[in-house]
Picture (tube, rainbow, N blue to C red):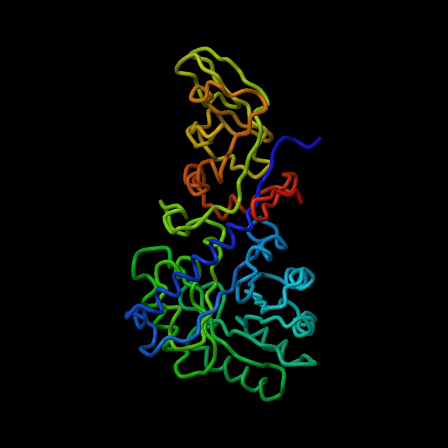
Length: 391
């Protein structure tokens, strides 16, 4: 018998969240401010959605996410193996490798599987120049507008673009698009104004698709996604029901949680006032109380940094952690749930439980990390239109 812990993934919630993002874009298209935040003052063009499914779809399972995001215009991921899995799962639409190819030998495989690659470094251009391809590779030329991780600086753009145009003439490169990644879209309002202007000034009159917006930019600056160019947005965390902004939850944007983490009560301890709980004796009972021992720990992906007071729910009733999270167990205050018994499910985040954004905030981290940290040993159940099936 497996340990009594499970993660329930909702494809219906994924589909809902994708629809919410599309509605944000549709609303922006109808708004008169489509020229704000550095966008060119022309009529709105087409906007498409790359659903980002890197890191095993933020811990949800790549194949499961492909089903949940079936209505996306394309899928964005990190490496070649993920693109091959997507094709094997039946996805026929566009695929984007966010960091592009890492080795020259991967390029023919990208062409064979109709994968679009970002180009962010001169070495990638040199690999293309040396390659022999059966068909041209579509690319997005990445511009560094301030993140200072990947991409060509504005002063390097012209040389890189000309090199790709030359490769285009030789049949090695197909369509050339342009992309960037904002460093502070989740920061202060207006934080993207300057980098967006840098992007548009750099690209100038170059023809091609553009891609600027991550989750935060789509939710806060959707006008950036409806400029006249063929525009692709790249939402990630918001598609999984979480907010990219501090001190908010995905619910505030109409998003639904896609992962619910639950574990059963293993034991109930009755402790006296003044007694402590767990490693380090970090929690001391202020009264006689019932402590529930839950079959989940940091080896399952629950954050060890979660302190006493972090929310958890039992039988639909809110309670909180009491004591330090250990490898395989954590402990909660059961006094608010007098009818709780061994075997009851405890919801640690998700539907009918605390929001994962709240748990992440209490633990001093972000929902991205909690989702991606789900351990392999946790059984995963997928909810298809109300029916839950174990993977």
